[in-house]
Length: 344
Image (cartoon, rainbow, N blue to C red; front, side, top):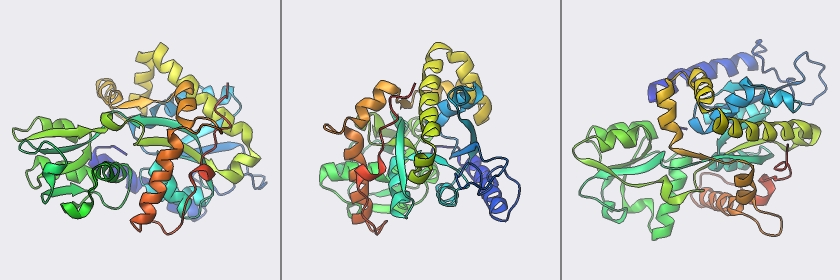
């Protein structure tokens, strides 16, 4: 998700090289037998690899790895940096990783692509980290009708969120002069004065506010629970390794609690892993809301009273199918598994 663009490019190239090496039989720590439950007898068969980008919403997983919380619950977890969503999907499908952290709408796309996965944990929801910036003469989405807006139309969290907002207003992308570009490039284009508005993320929201012509007309705080990141694993792996799934959930809970009780050390760990300064991490943490155990239980709901997680996942599945971005129906209940939420 949200990264400085130049950092994304560099990390993406490194990630792609890593996956190519693994596919050619190179020694990368993510061999096809690693933790896959295939009975290969690999020396790393007990290692669990989870892939994720350097988005702040995944940061507590770094803490769980660094502080040994996963190991305390019986899982030897290694976090692998994979910035590209395409690369993480490929790695998960090929069993080069055993789990992936990404936004819920991408998990739906992965399921539609044939990966039989289950989301077992809600990680975070964007709480101001995404938004729509526009010239000051425009104060609402309706005001942007017919105007030039920058948006990544290939999918992803911001595209899903914008489509969600448009549905609430009875509007479609046809109401705008859409310029297709990545979220980072969209923010840069707006700050450079090349478009009337952009759907983007931090730090571009703040940069837009600092111009003499731009402001944020709406951000993700207005729709908490829509832009959500989740952790998913393949169902076959969960079936063979339920203790690992339980350990990852329990480790996440411990990491969230550690961030509350030891904020300075937690921020230092995150800053080191993400290659940023502690003060930058403090600022970025304001843009997300993490789901602890109580938050997960509320978001998942129960079998008899399903929570918003099912509703938003179903919305993403329908939206992607209606837009032609996927060609397979995805049942929300089939890719959500709340059976590990009571992990301790």
